[in-house]
Length: 261
Length: 335
Image 1: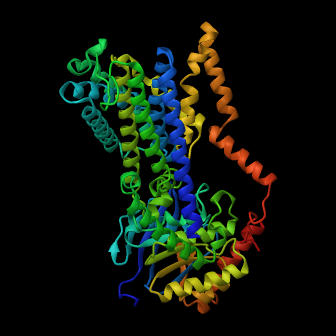
Image 2 (image 1 turned 180 degrees about the vertical axis):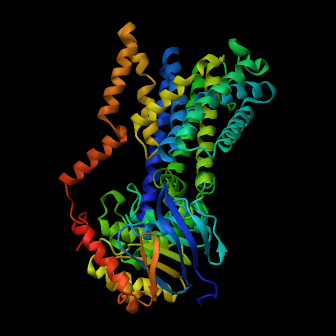
Image 3 (image 1 turned 45 degrees about the vertical axis):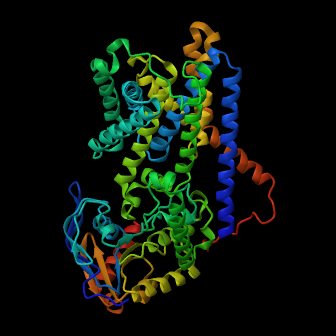
């Protein structure tokens, strides 16, 4: 699939405040289709808040377009209609559902998912469910999470939850993908697989916004990097250049100082 | 994989089938040998099974707390009594259930923007409102004195004047409701409801139609509750608004919590345990209310996940003791 000319995600001057505290003081960035943009910065710089703003989890002001269509902010679920999916800093899977079942809930095929279909149109519901399960198995396999297929969320390892959550968004075949620290809790093999996966997704035309703390992952997989600090964009550029920037280095060393105090 | 799943589905169908056969045999034995007292209690149990299954889906599965149970049941009962004056009882049954479902949908649509807590509060008011409307709508409800005699649903199979026959039809209807409940519980729809209940924002951001799912769950609750109301009217010959008060909603809640959630067996067990409890405790005389309360308290504290939860924990324990080869799963993920 060729990347369309329109940008996957356009964020313009997005502001979020919690009472008098501004978590985002007007951030703009663009994720072109088929590219991976890295979003990084010290803890509390507003990375997750930006993803939460785009997906309506927190109230926000500003302008966001997904796939070229303006998005109504502060309304969860709107972004999903435009083919945008996200993962969470703390992976969120349902504790009572198995890996496969969790992934199935993310599938876009809604056939047979009504009360009346469950009772009166069981054949059709069954056929649709088989399709969903097949795709869910494939998605789990793709992220390397097949071991979690029949394990319920409550007893999954942290890494398995991450992979199941990733499969749950991938099964929806998103055009815009926001990943919030997807490598946290994964082992080295899994991180390598994640890197390949993100590169493949971008090659398929998906616009990926990647939040992560692993600098090696960001450098290898991202086309651009955006660095946030205290709710503002500090710097943006090619990965290799960004780390040479004095203020970026200061921000990171500053973070170390804060942690040390 | 496919064959394992197919056999899981078949096993569930077999369990449902054999469970229903047992259920119907119990009903037949009660109908054949029971005296009037037992038949009355068993009729009430059949009604409670339907109420509990419907409430279990809307509350335990979709996370909507509805206190309108009594109002909806009253709508079903008086709706049936009114329809039955103008048409055969079987058609009146369908009409009354349909009317209650529409009423439930209207209630939920009007309150769809409320958060869960506020909806729970609103549902108390709505349930009370239905009761007030009914008590003043004398041509429909007979006012405070009630209406009757209400014809029984017979499907032409039993004598509508005979208690055992009328009971048997009610038991049959509750079996149909249990079967429908089982299919609902095992569906992709019920799985989506769990996500709506526990991971609402996540489901929304994954594209789940949250409000449609909530409305549907409420409609199912209304339909089941309407059916229970019809069964009350059909088995009771005479109905009065006084039998539909808030304690009905509380009792159904206790059944669902006690039985456990996740599958249709939970509310069935809950109804089977709670319905005869006041009768059994009659022996305690003036203390029966207190004994009832204390018994419930002990049971609810001891069984936080209900009877089903206890059973599942026992099974997990037994499995851990008797590890069979091939059941150990290799855990991946951590370095």
